[in-house]
Amino acid sequence: MPEQKPENAQPVPEKDTQIFDLNAEDVKQAMAVCGKIIQDGGTVVFPTETVYGLGANALSTDAVAQIYAAKGRPGDNPLIVHIYDTAQLKDLVAEVPDKAKKLADAYWPGPLTMIMKRSDKIPDSVTAGLDTVGIRFPSHPMAHAFLEASDRPVAAPSANISGRPSPTKGQHVLEDMLGKVDAILIADESDVGLESTVIDMTTEPPTVYRPGGITVEDIKAVIGEVAVSPGAVKPVELKEVRSPGMKYRHYAPKGKMVIARGSLDEMADKINEGIRKLHPDQKGAILATDETLDRYHKGIILSLGSRKDPSEMSHKLFDCLRAFDDLGATDIFAEDIPVTNDTLALINRLYKAAGYTFI
Image (tube, rainbow, N blue to C red; front, top):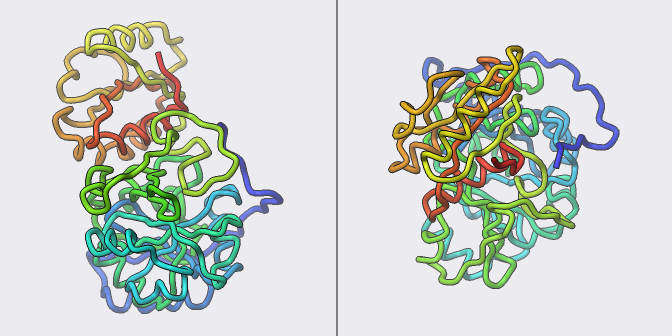
């Protein structure tokens, strides 16, 4: 489904964005400045262990509106609220289910978002009018320092133009958010490279809506049976969006992208034929793996990494998609990856980036 813009969207006034390189500047001072920006109702881009986030005070409707404006994000796409201490939960959710407590003990801080019944302090703009809210406790030390300095729960989607690949590097953030936010905190490249796992704790069994670094099997090991939303690996029509990344085309490069299916030989044949048929004005690109690079000789050819290393492929996906944009690719052919517990998150992002288009 094509990306939809918020109703009555207005042009975003240019902002004088402050940039803080956390590898070169006084971290304490940078956090103090950015924490005050959040308290005053502004927006700050900050690093996490998954991808960069675009944050604002989750308890302020006016502040949250700036997130939607900066991203061009649909208003029915809920946001995740970030915390630095589980004590904050009492003001954000109506209750913490026992299974949520077990997962928090096991995987917080970390790349796990849990959906729970919201408190009346959370604005509708954060939850897209739903009676639930997603909560995440990131493990990145700079994210923790920023959230603590803000002393507010921070609503934060990924810090990219809505629909584009999520940002894992400072360079990506500058491309998408410079002049649209009040400040940007730049640190090292994200460790995980894909957004957090999202699990709904209000269903029985709990339902994974967005797979991520905490896998389905990781979760099962702690709380037992878990359901996985069909939308994790195929397009579905939804009446409501209970988690980011469920409804709209996400993570997409600027060029048209398709996924080749079949054996390694069959995929290579399909991709090479697709590249051969392109018009001279089109710029073809191939997303391959280490094991298949030597099968391709024309176009922009990038490797996700080894098929034997799902974490490496996940880490590199968004960087490769943005590289295709930088190189002007108009038509991108990607190899399919077998779906396993360890590749489910990667497959979810890859398929959505291609709009579930296969050859």
